Amino acid sequence: MNFYQKVYQVVKKIPSGKVATYGQIGSIISSPRSAQIVGFALRALPENSGVPWQRVINSEGRISIQNLRHRQSEQADLLKKEGVEVEFRDNAYCVDLAKYLHRFKRFG
Image (cartoon, rainbow, N blue to C red; front, top):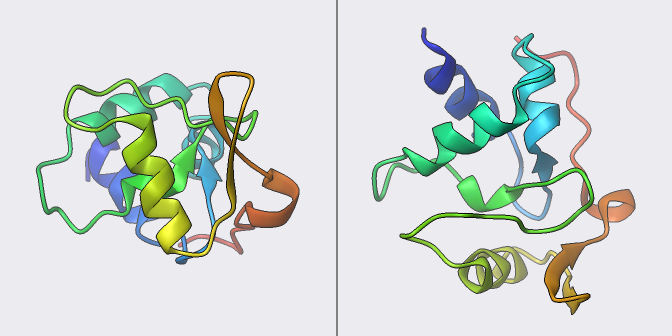
């Protein structure tokens, strides 16, 4: 299984109503300094992949998507539909990580 496939496998484990961070995903797949590569993997997802990409945000709780196919507001809307409170402040969409961060159990 390649790196991107491992990212997708982990992201599929994030339940609706929760989020994870790019760095958290990287750490789970034993590549703790790969947050940016996790972002690349999610950007490369084909449409209708079934991978809940919207549940991955940055370590500050901000939606930091940089993708021509999807806007930050779209990711915020998708999260809101799942019950995640998303606030617009300091020119960014933000999520309270203390409340919504998914705590992965042993992954395997």
